[in-house]
Image (cartoon, rainbow, N blue to C red; front, side, top):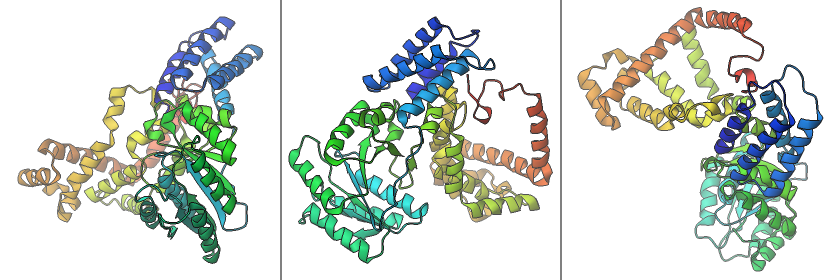
Length: 465
């Protein structure tokens, strides 16, 4: 998400490098390019106008620290204004109500409401330790109820049965009663997709709303619809009084217009970003972190949270113990590391969270595609337990068998074995006190660096311009 906008803004601000100070002409030229970048990202025109006005007033009305270059000063202004239009801080779900807390999900057809319901249930169960019930009021879409039942089983939520012959308002009412009886903390109510101009369907969802009096009413919208997402959310808000927005399919949206427009157009906060079909692909929306990612400054806090949440701590501790004993880093360990990376979306999925990574050339980014990791895992899976523990026994005939079993070429097997050998050497050094020596060297290097970290920026979340 935001790839196009990040690239355009980075190029625009880079043009200020080498200039002694921010001049009125320089600000005007830079803001013209930023305006074009925002419009190309499908940000709503009123939002663009408000954004540009805010940056202009601050740029021409303030004195900046002498330590800031013109590029850094403009990045700070743009960053602060992005945070303002997106909502300043994360607004979490409000669960401060008598249990079960009803949460209603509404939206257009195909926006991802059912999948989002399951994702939200998983987040509440795993991170908030809540007992969650889900129910489907979608009596129109074939297999919608069955889909939610399957997803509920996957995430560990309680599923309240419903049938296509029932009235949606009755389904919601019965679910609320069942949630009370089963001592649930939260009730998530999935609804059928509808257009805001369909008066009959809007009347139906108002009935559901009246029956359960939801503490939170979330509008689920496809981020790829751009500024239309904000306009549709505003129309739904008039009928339902929304409390928040969930942007879905953000992995397919390279522009980011919806995320930048929806708060200003609707007055309602974006609470979550969803990506992909996996039930763990839902993250809280933090305006400041998103603004940093848009400007190529990374999002280290979200990366740390993701690692803490998704890395198997027991496997990590087992690997550390092996390293301390000087035991071999075998192919089972190598596969485990790759699987952990896959759980976090692969290297490609982590790159936009690392400072400075947005400026890498496309051919470099292409080298970290996830299909290479999947291929290596398939090669290791085609080996016998003995081969995984003692890779040195893998010779000609074994390589042919492994390549055939994994659907790859012998060259791919050789490449994997070479990479494993290099990592094995590194692990041995780290196990013999190499980590301490490495940190010591890095400490000396850090003392030799100029203020602001590594040349080119990006170190420690510093501005990359």
